Picture (tube, one colour):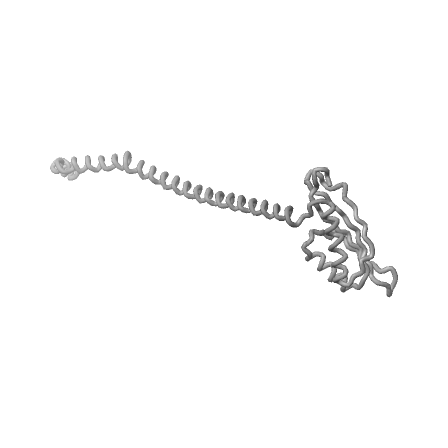
Length: 192
């Protein structure tokens, strides 16, 4: 008998339970511990994905709330613009430009020479706004024109400068400033 066989025969009472315990440990690891480890690793991965999805959803919610707040603020500012800044009708728009331009010209030491006003028929009626265009000629000095334009742009009246042309007919004569201005007004039920 060989040495290994002799040890097995003599210590069989100790070796058999030891081998059985090792086999049970391997079986428990293979069928219980390892699957639970895989399952818990999958649960951890799912938890990480759920946390990142939650964070993305919270970011989207914050962006949506910001958009709603921005839209609400824009609506309020637009209502303020329509209610307080924009003229109510064509006659209010005409009074606005007829009154403001001569006063601003006088303040800037610019001579108010001539004005021609027309209603823009191409303005979009679907927007509920009409457009009045004024072509105005002024005479004066360059520095006074700069002051006039600054005063016009910073005035509370809603007037848009569409075009400006500066010319001088003859040397030594005053400069001529041609300005095309627009103002918008709310259209009434009859389109005026």
